[in-house]
Image (tube, rainbow, N blue to C red):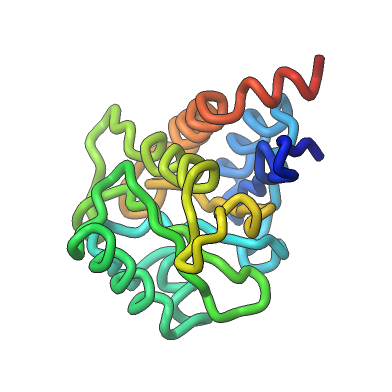
Length: 198
């Protein structure tokens, strides 16, 4: 595990999750060649990470897909996400941005909301780059963001689980989603990966 001069992690551990065989296979394609990324074929809530990712919408409505699962487990999570969006972005979080909120659980204690679509249950256009933008937003917030109490996110969150981004209502193929998440990872952490394997 590599850290910087302040003792902060330079990359988080990432767990790519899916119960869908095609998505899991696509996750393996990108994880097998990248240190610090692994795949879990099962429920994202079983992984035991510090944070999970919600690929919701720009208004923080968490009524379908994996977001409905999160809302069932943490009944106040939607209101927390929407409050964070209101406080930071005036109530609408653009695709390409992310917020982090407490879940109220011990683990995962945190949830990143990174929209893959503006409106709920929207079919994304062919060739969309929204999964890339959502993943990049999570990774950038991890690298440079702060929690409400001022602590850097990367000092608190050491591991993050991601579901498929845009692969439900959005209709993005597993292969495209995986490629885009890999591109976002490589952009943000590729230098650390190369130094770790050198």
